[in-house]
Length: 502
Image (cartoon, rainbow, N blue to C red; front, side, top):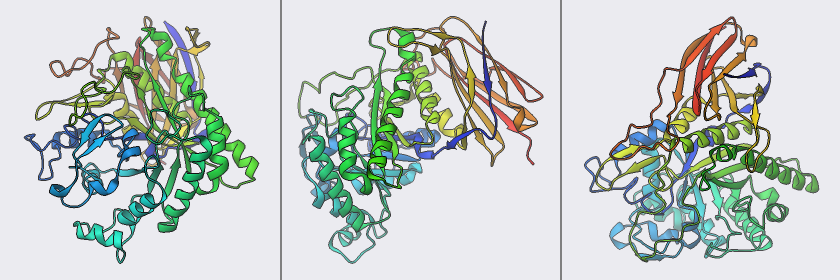
């Protein structure tokens, strides 16, 4: 059996977890909105057409913020089309995904849905075909109390109280040639800065996210970030990162090592932010928003060949057990960077590369990736500890010195809980994990949750929704501040411990 060690000290801290790192994303793409959160023909639909079974599934994930309405979609979106009487709303050709947008759901309806699931809205503005004027008007419509044209228009639409959306994205992936209105770094930096100024003049309390490169693999990467921040640093609060991974080459060891790439990506962007801060001699340290991340096996596939359909199924990836392990590794990596990554959005929430799947007017089921995200979101609150980890390592095609153990610990002092998240990357062998947490004094065992399956390609489907499920049968012993646990091969583990309250 492999052996590994963790030393956890309550005074060795990375940072408090910002709950928004457990955010998600709903775009007007495929069946995310129509057929996903909104399905008026469904037996559980409420008066507004929102699926109650989907709401309950999302509430169980405890998602604190959801990015909306895009994504590529937002770069061609006229927000005015999605407010006012639904019967009077215009149908539009949606150029990002070659569909017809009915605008049955818009800003106000999404705000209503967000309240139902207990989440905040991360609103995105269109900097592709629109700009400063549309953005400032949207902030006024959403956040200003009353007494102006746009705020009074909101009131006339039945929303007396402002939505008070706090977090706003300044466009989406604006360096991408696939983007409507794609820009150079200088063009985007200028418009992002001027839009940010106007939006904050309308509401000084909002926070703004500037677009980083669409991915680390873009030729624009690094130069884009440096140029954009050079032009907008003092008027924005976060820089975005987007990261997707897959195992399309069917090399599981390499795939599970891809969290090392995410780790390096985050470090690189943080370094660029710090370079610009130093260059500008600024007192402000910019934080990061990983507002799109996931396993995306169908990435690179084209839009629907049959154009101008309404909410056709798109990018409905079926996730495997190994995909769930990868998601677990990414979650651990995000927590390791809790000092800089303050927001992160699993892309997306429902039907489109999502942990939750639905059938129009029918069933709902959870993909394998639902479970590590749910565990992290519910149990990974508190302070991330700087755990010292010792583990056997391996080399893969693209990575060297990959630890078989990927792990992090979180201390929830208020509730007296310590949670260890751990992935055993070894595909054939168990691993003994020895944890020293004597600095916490007396601790007791609560539970050891395990997600495992002998078939790495095992999936959950409509006809077999419980094929890959977590269980509470993990093997863990606690004795005088020392923990001995067994991590089964290719497994995601959540070890929960209780500290003695003072």
